[in-house]
Length: 325
Image (tube, rainbow, N blue to C red; front, side):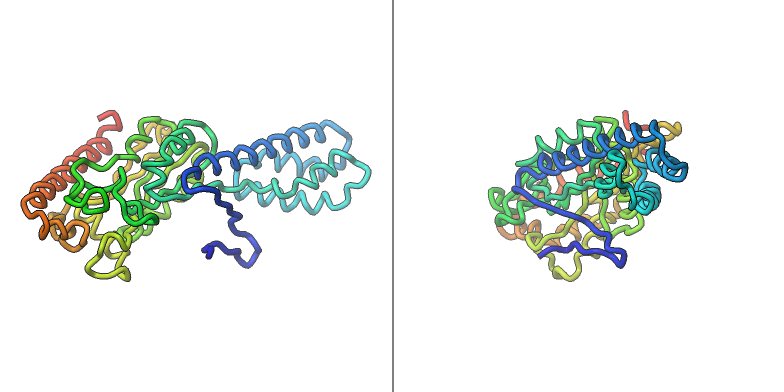
């Protein structure tokens, strides 16, 4: 099944998928191919503007050329151009431009995957994409476990969580993917939780799309492997509790703010409210350890709390004083 559809105007996502492990490489290749085609189109437009063509067509081509990297404006100028290019017989350049009408509107490129791919098996590809300057976006749905292959522990798995290959609780800390990518400096990075703040979620997606370079959005995604005592029908509330307890951080790193003389790092959640242990007890992946290894559960839970509080202090410092803290 596919969740993608079109709106009343027939606009919607075109999508494709290859292998679990090559989402970054596959999506990046598609973006590069599309970008190369648009650059070739822009060259044709520039060549055409140097020829003798009607004034209204010259104006429309000039307008599109200036707006080609803006999603909304490229659609507006592109739609006008389509109308004017309906009768282009006899002009080879204009005929070639007319055949490229699928390139007029700037498209939004997104690579979508889970944490098993992003943190583990496909990390090198993700890292390569983020290290480039291409205008492309990556959405990671972080369930903190290899969900689609049976619930194995991954580098995204939280300290103390029970999963396959960590039956007595994971002993080491979760990989901090978002903060690692922030160190590049030029990439947009956001950590979101829709159940906690839908407005922050929308802001992150819009800012990521507008950023003229690579973007990474990491989303907290409650999963059946978590064993929510409230049931999977309460995932949005669980995502809210995760943020309030400090278990999941919310922030946005927008390099564009640096150009305005502002701190590019914005913290979007408050200090942990002291409910972390209750949050952990309400998920089987943590609560199961209380029965099987009570002493180890106590030790690891203490470690989780320490990590959560230290992370908040670090992120608060970055928000107050800059990312170099």
